[in-house]
Length: 126
Ligand code: FES
Image (cartoon, rainbow, N blue to C red; front, side, top):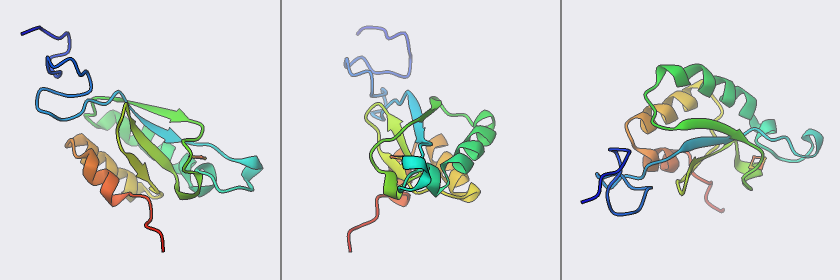
């Protein structure tokens, strides 16, 4: 058995999986982009700035094992604000209120990223 420098990781060689079988994420990314000077659907036009401010306000109080990053566009502009756990994690879409941010961080803090993705999922086609 080899020893990892990060005790959360398994010795399977897959650095995205904890010894418990849960994925290890490096960051939660939030898109804060405005498209075409605010005229096209975008995370920025759908409240990403307020979501970013609330994430930054709550982040220091949380025990989250990854970083918070802002990026410009992840291709889901019309259903944002778009968040994604990286590497390889799920999208978390459409959070717009302080309560949404609190709910998402509560779930991520307990390691339930899949539930966060289910509750903030891409809308189903009509
Ligand atoms: S503007 Fe946020 S995903 Fe494109």
